[in-house]
Image (tube, rainbow, N blue to C red):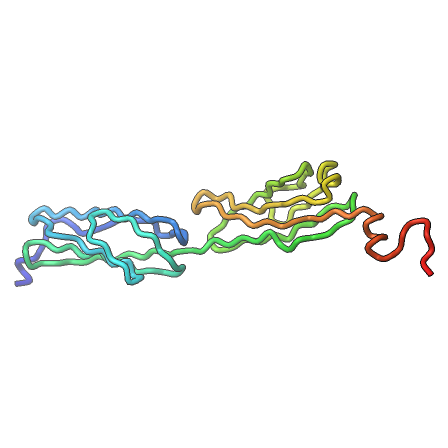
Length: 193
C-alpha cells in the first residue's frame, strides 16, 4: 500500500545547472532514507540514456535543456522520484576570415564567440603585438619576424574556466609593395606595352 512507502528523510541530488557539450557531468545522489534501505537507483538523463549507479557521470551529446530524473527503489515495492534541470551549452568561437594586408599595416580582427564562452584571448605564432589580446575585435600589429615570414597565424581561444578551451585560427598574409606590383602584372622600372 501507499502508506507502507512513506519515507522519513529525503530523495535528492546535486549537479551543475549548466554543462558544456561533450564534458562529463557528475550527479551526486543526496538521498537519505532513515526508515528504508535503498534497493536500487535509476537515473534518466532526459536524452534516452540511463544509469543505475548511485553517483553517475554522464556526457550529453547534444545541446539543450534536459530534465534529469532520479528514481529511488526501496522497501521491496516502493519508489519515489525527483527531477532537476541541466542546461547543456555548446561553446562557439570564430577567429574570423583570413586576411591579406600590406607590410606596415595593422590587422583589425573580427573574432566572435557564443554559447557559454565568456572570455577569449589571442595567442600568436608570430612576434607582433595586440592592442588588447582579451578582446575578440583586437588590433594586431605584425612584428619584424611576421613581415619576414610574410605570414602569421592568429588563434582565438576561449579562456573561461567553465568549459574546456576551444579555439579557431585565421592566417594573416603580409604583402610588400613589390608583391602587389608583380601580382598586378607590372614590374618596377619596366614599361608594359
